[in-house]
Length: 362
Image: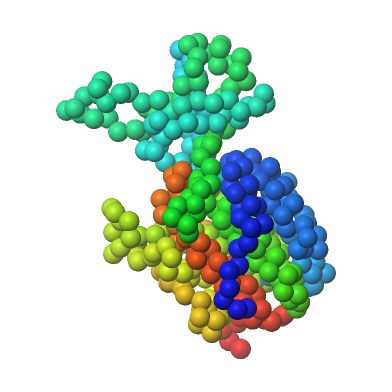
């Protein structure tokens, strides 16, 4: 495929709509509907599972099955306690960062609709200069403008209501996409674009392609575990995000070197099947797709682990999108990296042969 712009106006319209929709862990279905509606012209069929993982399929009758996967959920909070004076205290739903919470506006999801609130914080004038207390999970709180607990409850808020940030998509300096939940709504977007390109370029695959948008990754790869058992694929190429380590306060000797704008990151880890990874790196080199490498100790911490160790072992690989400020509301990725992840997955799929075992002993 020639190196030309992959993303078009329709793609970016879908991306913005998909990102701006809230899809917290355990409540992903509205986002999944948007995702499936976009993919409809490019695939043969869909199916979903009990917890909301969505799968689009090309060539569903083929026996040999290849998965490309991202995850659909975003981090959030739960209402954990409502005080007598009408303040809400929270617990995490996924790896929500308590340090960014103070002064953030939030959406509280209730059966009556969205209720707005704010994470309050004592004014700088009132805090002890000798002993500054940092924000912690046990001292951050949400103010919804009520003075009593029963006022809060009349708004439809109760323990267990999920809470998200309303921060929406924007573009920084022409080529940087900024939003909450790029981790890993970008994965779902990129695999959808792969399906679009296969259709538009009239590529016929010799295997069944399962485009999987998993749920509940943020609380332990749960959606991928469930769907891997159902699909029982032969191969899985997973895409997620990884840390740009060039910003302040990150130790490259610990985290490695990775930079947005320098290409997809190909993982080296026990869960990554080496012959499949070599196919991907060889593909990148042949098509002059820039890429970076990352070494991951023990687990990858992504849905790769769930697929790799399912069904007696599935040849799996991880292609990551470099991202700044993970688990904040200003997660940032570079447009070039997005296009190159799409290009790398697309070209790698065209190299996979039906029935390929990726055995080390052939």
